Image (tube, rainbow, N blue to C red; front, side, top):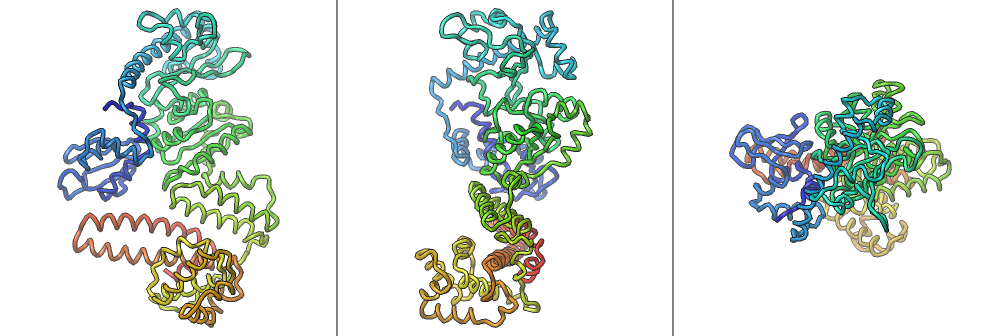
Length: 609
């Protein structure tokens, strides 16, 4: 089964090596790598390492080594085609079938690589020759010395229609092949002619460093200023980043990749000591670009020009990335001084200027906030509600539920702190009503908290729809409360839009009696978010924070049980439970940290947990 290398690279980019191995091995962070007991031989001291950055595993004990495909083959006893099929399904890809035509295409691709290499050497020679004087002067003015020209294999395309054609074309590399490689343009009538003429040439390589395309910068005032190869069997501009072959090792070493807008920016940063720089090729960042960047570093730094076009490019990249976010995988953004790009910034302020900008880089969440609040007024309840709705719709696109959960929390808190709840411009909002009574025994907290949550929902039925998924996951020990909760959830599902009186009128028997008891409780003087005078905003905040506290309490209790069980009888099932619980704990603890910014909410969490 012949499978194109690019397809295998796409699988490796989409399927996390650490995630796959963690299903079978308990991994712990050890510096930049992960470490655990080797699954392929018996050992008591961990010698099995996983490098997510470099995309391979290695055991120093038995010598097992490979990538994610090799791991699945070893661990699950699958053949290579079966492992590829399995991982492709996880990545949402369809495995291409190796037809005779496809095999012929692979052979042709090898020949096209030969053509591109010959063309690259031709351009390099021309830059050094008598016709390359103007190009050499241009590069010198840009601060590009001989060593840099050689390292990036820069060249020059003479300003004639047939120089490349005459130099490269022969019996083994006919005219049609040069057209297919994007080196010649075939007019509707007449002889094909050189695509690149009178331009400084920037070779574009694949991940392995093979030349697959070219970019050309015109000398003089002609148009277009920059010209790239067209898409060919070797090259797709939506999948390739300029400088990627040279940046990969540095990006892994520095745990950082810097994304700029053009060839000269990449070269300038490289010369200044930033070899981890790359750039898209005249197009906005695509999904394939982002997956490639995340293979290099968990939070690529996007460094676009300091003008309106650069800002728009950053906004487009943010919107493209939102659905793809995963735990630990995001973007960061650098805002350059107005009118400058990395090349000009280095020329004017040197490395210190670049370092200053990198230190001031912003998270993706900050850029999203800027996108939707810049130069706008939110001085009415309607405008704040509109902002909430816009951001909620954007966050709906995040596929990973944990990341979506954290983003919703973040922006809910940010809107509240910035504008107050639903246009309360005092900045104080309603959360002052979230108070938990002091002195209650810890063992009583989960049970009592559930009662106050249910009471709050009875008073504010719209909140049931907002929190329905989290409510459905609650494990309620009190049978009567559990029955009432199920009745309430069912009623709101069947008859949405009920208010307090409408909801109560639909309850009957033991549910109605319990609801009356809950709503008459005198203790609500202290639990104000569940009381009769609480606003919708106060009730919403109270339920949210109470659910966080219950989640923390439950996960910590289960975690303690699993840890105790492992001390007595270590087994794979409990190890997997331990990993899962710790992951859940991280998510909930993150929400706890956000909530702690509000003193009343923080007090609630401390009491509940």
